[in-house]
Length: 88
Image (cartoon, rainbow, N blue to C red; front, side, top):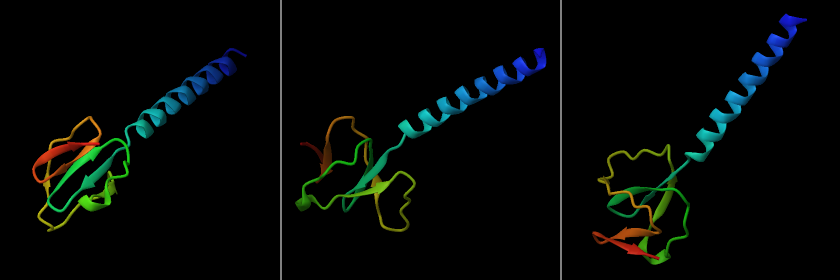
């Protein structure tokens, strides 16, 4: 009986640990927003003004040979446009 309790405790602890890992992994999701010249990370998939030409990609997206550069990530809501940060 003692062995059965140990197995149950170990199984319960493993399940709790697995749930914690999955919750952490899913909360770390992000997106990559790009305009014609630069890209930056965003936490939320905002609806950007159509006139500024911003495309949002999943975090796993990688560019190849398009001449992009990484812009500084910002915590506030907005976008990079002509070298400056525009809030909205």
